[in-house]
Length: 124
Length: 124
DNA sequence: AGCTACTTGCAAATCATTCGCAGTTATGCT
DNA sequence: AGCATAACTGCGAATGATTTGCAAGTAGCT
Image (cartoon, rainbow over all chains, first blue to last red; front, side):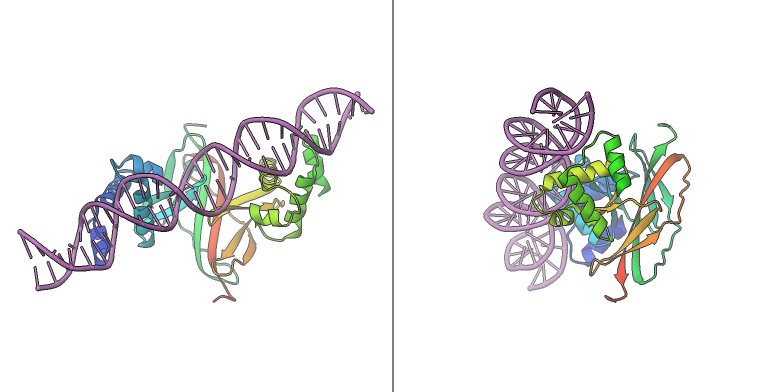
């Protein structure tokens, strides 16, 4: 957390109430949140500002984002690459380590995003 | 192609001009197309109808769709699972076979979608 | 040829996300 | 502590992809 503050300040970004609120929301949860979900955890912060904060954090690699079901979901970056699998019935999210390195002919600088959808034990 | 017609008719769906035009557009190209791109290949068909056709085909598993860069891209289903890698500079798309089977604790019926973005040889 | 459920075109509605702008504020400087 | 100022925010309006409601049209049956 302190490290995040440092990163922001070092690059000339201010430590403002909306940004802190967004960070708090993301920290409190242990799963990726949509912008709307983050917003619901912040009192009195404008939705547009939530988006702006999330985009800033994304740009600074402080959060990772992935598309799921027509919306972007955001989670705090950790030092180990990881992905999520989402239960398509109840929305339960589980995290797992990413062990993959992709090599494809003709391409370099490959980034990958893996979207897994399944049905969890409870719903099955 | 004939097989697709059969599938439609068998389920009570009609073989209409917009649907045929969408199928033709998808067949002609060897890469996934956005709804808008499909639409540009069809003369005089309404955009909404293109979307409706694509959604129908998706429901019937005749086409696969994946999100790239804020829009859905569609391609005809083939019998072998495959993915695409997209060059983030020029948009060039290359196909590769999917060799993966995911096993994750607590989850069944796992479907995956892999989104690869990189830089192709030409742009590098 | 006629029936009818399935389809279409059109325009309006949605929904997530972004933008323009005028007013605010965090931070570095003195 | 007070100032200056670039970095922010809130608001409402704009955007852009996709969907929807509805009246009119049509494929495919008998």
